[in-house]
Each structure stands twice: as structure tokens, then as C-alpha cells.
Image 1 (cartoon, rainbow, N blue to C red):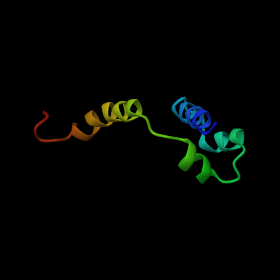
Image 2: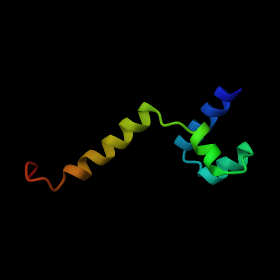
Image 3: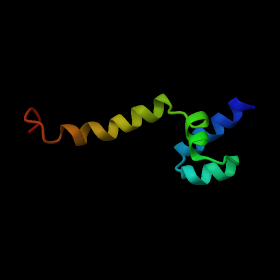
Image 4: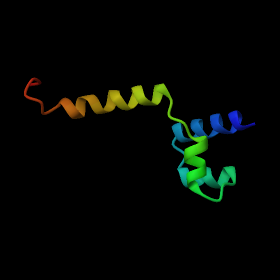
Length: 65
């Protein structure tokens, strides 16, 4: 059952559901339980974030005119 709840929580975070809303849906008394135990960062999320941040972080580098 934990695996299903973890997958659900992770997918909801990826879909943009606010953590506090997810906490209520899962019935947790503390948001730390929701985020630490059930919401996991996926490789796809890391790759997506990197694709957004790379142009921002390299925009003002001397090597990039």
C-alpha cells in the first residue's frame, strides 16, 4: 500500500498539486510526513528542471555571447 500512496503523492506533486492540499488528501497531520515519506523526486523532474535552469545560469557567462 505504501508504494501506491508514494506513487500517487509523487505524481500529484509533479502535476502541480500544492503540498498542503496533498497533505489533506492523504490525511497526514504534518506536511513533513507527506513530503519526506511519500513525495519523491523523479529523474524526469530533475532533467526538466535542469533544462530550465541551464539557459538561465549560463546566460551571462563570458563564454556565451
